Amino acid sequence: MNLNQFEKISDFEWRIARDTRPGMKVPVVVFASEVMLRDALQDRSIEQAINAAFLPGLVGTICVMPDVHQGYGFPIGGVAATDYETGVISPGAIGYDINCGIRLLCSNLPAQEAKPHIAEFTAALFRACPSGVGSDGIIRLNAKELKRVCETGSAWALKNGYASPQDIATTEDGGCIDGADFGSAGSRAAERGADQAGSLGAGNHFIEVDVVAQVFDENAANAMGIHQGSLALQIHSGSRGFGHQVCTDFVQKFQIAARKYNFDLPDRELVCAPLQSYEGQEYLAAMRCAANYAFCNRQLLAYSARKTFEDFFSGYHLLNVYDLAHNIGKIETHQIGKNSMKVCVHRKGATRAFPVGHPALTEQYRLIGQPVLVPGSMGTESWVLVGTSLGMQKSFGSCSHGAGRVLSRTQAKKQIRGDQLRTQLMRDGIYVQAGSLGGLAEEAPQAYKDIDSVIACIEGAGLGKRVARLTPLAVIKG
Amino acid sequence: MVHILMEAEDDESLLVSFLNELLYFSAKGRMAENLTLIITHHKLDANISMLPKIGQLKDVKAATYNNLIIDKRGSGLETCIVFDI
Picture 1: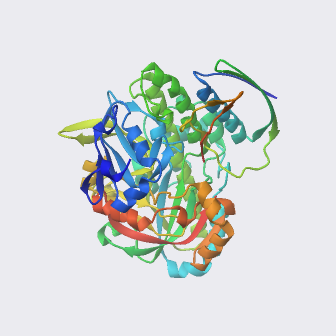
Picture 2 (picture 1 turned 120 degrees about the vertical axis):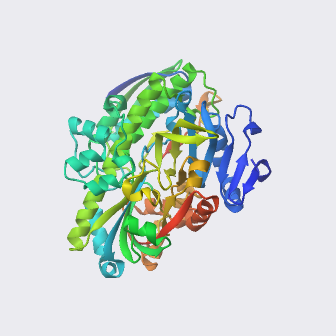
Picture 3 (picture 1 turned 120 degrees about the horizontal axis):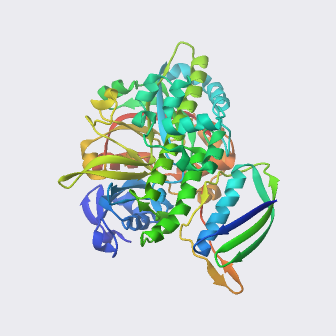
């Protein structure tokens, strides 16, 4: 692909026509500046978005976010909606880490007061929140309890004293997606999930201690409990081995299903099954189990982080701002042309971003719109936005999920030394606690796009609106 | 010793399936030390001796089908497989 094959709709929207390749079901729209689009054309992400346009039963357009980068089959930063009755569901369009997501908590503690204790506090957080490859979680679940976690999500945490009602109210879908069936997830996922509830994992997962550096929308920030100068905490994790196993199992099962239903797809990672088929419903029920597991996982981590915070900074509190999914398939209603349609929205590396008044939003956010959490790379700023009505029309109410990679992990490790990076971050006033220096190098700021450019594209395209900017003080990597 | 019998619709699927089987054992704290493989007509018969896993540097989520093609090269086969990490 080259730039000539795009129709420029605006400075931040580029369209690839449906007739670009025979077999495409819908056009592709890329939300990016020209510079970012040129960058995106350097890897296979746009090709993957075109491949995604072959999925049967698609409606509207394939949407590509400004933080897009190459994934497996489906690009990371891609959104696809399929007709609820006649469309398909594709595990690869949701991702291996089902309901990988972000949680933001904000305190009433002035960051200036906390700064002298940051190293000690971060070390305490590192001890309290298990991290690293294959790490066991805060709790071990027996089969009965694991089933409850998978079917009720964060409600399990509330019932067992690991959550407050405010935590639940400020989690996407209240921390539980209905329709989860533990039996559909399979015994291997269950085996892997039993030990890992309340663990961060490795890779790009992190806990970050931030200061609210700037507030752009006082009204929205107040509603979220975000105050300039206060200490905040971000948690990035997902469904751990449970979700990986669910996706692995269904990508394999759907190789057969795709043949059975005569789906001709350009990439086998895009395999799918009709949403209303037995196979489609089985995956949906299993995927929801993993999503609920992930909601509960982040809740357990938040519980542990909050306890550490309150022990450390006695008299201050740490309230949940929002917890959201950015690898998920959701049944939602959207306006497609003149029709209101029930669709399955696949978001892979994309965040739901519903606007003011949307019925799915908790009362606290119905008047300001859904908080959208866009973390920057390690060592750079993160953003809090709100969803918009325009985003509802253009991108199925979706927004970016982060900065987006520009270097693969291997490239990053070749170019950056973990020990030097840690020294540099420390020099910049960011305390680092990492499980491995190699893992740290993979997540270096240079490996990611410039977050401010991503946010400018989001605002330029009208997919989100700025509320606040966070600056990192400390980061924990698994 | 672990005995694995597998069947798939093609060799690519068999390979991904087998590697994901090894990843599953790895997630359960066991790694392959020695293995004997017999592959015929998209069927695989493997005997694997396992060792307890001591450590792991990478969290490997899965073996993927990303651009996966198995080519014949001389008397052998060649492929490039992408893992989700």
